[in-house]
Image (tube, rainbow, N blue to C red; front, side, top):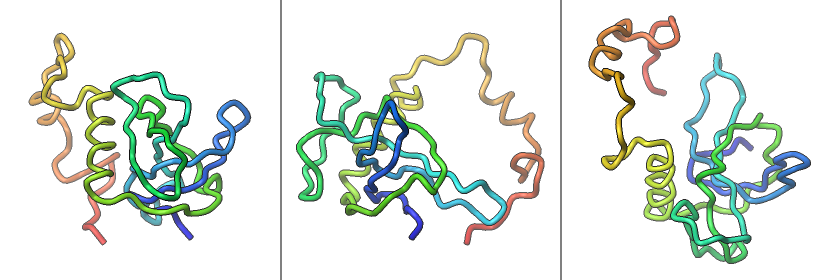
Length: 136
């Protein structure tokens, strides 16, 4: 099985992070893309941070998704599916990820960065130098 956005999987996050539940937030990869999965880890060691987003689901211990830990791992690190968040629960976690990355309405723009000029400089309809593919 391949992890799907919104699902919670048990992931092997390496020696330092160990095996723990994680929410899949990345979109499905295409055939030409690398087999990577972007996740937000779940923790039971809470500190009261605004970036700890709780989700009350029966398949997880009490805790929260730590959006400061958003990471990307090879798909082979996904061990097994634990369950799926409801759309409103996923939306809360994803909104916090955007806030952590400075992509919400409260973000301070980078000094000297002109988003319009940057977007205008991108080749139209292309990504990474390749023609854009229609959604599947």
